[in-house]
Amino acid sequence: MSQFFNSHEISYTEATRAYLRIRGFAEDPDLISIKLPIAGSRFWKKGQQLTPRKTNGAADNGWELQSALPDDHELTDHVKHLIDLIRPYKAVLESITDAEDQLSFELVCVIQGDNANPSFSLGNNLLKEVAMLGFSLEVDIYAIE
Image (cartoon, rainbow, N blue to C red):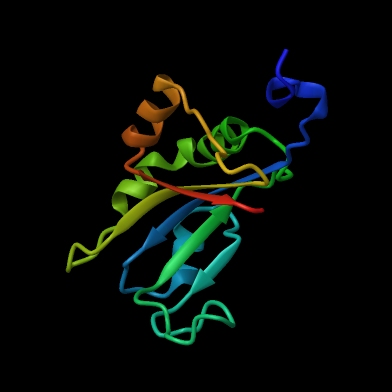
């Protein structure tokens, strides 16, 4: 057996996170938390600096709900957790509108691994439910060497 494929000699670490994000609305982000009786994890207003490295401000208002699961859980677990939280409020999500139609509903999946090829998989039924709730899918994959 090739040493390359000898699994007991390979060390691999992966961290996953997932967020539901609503962006592009004109109203104060706090109003999203009032409409959705779920405590968001992060909020921002247009022009607010989001990270120390990014000096330009946010392009729009935003509300974010991060999975409460630890980052050693499978990505599928994070997504199911978020969907279970937001599913009862589908009608509320549909009622959040903006006159300029700039709203964006996003499921953001983040994978970090110390391998050059971190990967993920989400099943058809889970992707269908994400789409039925009106969320697009964004995937950020980071290989940490």
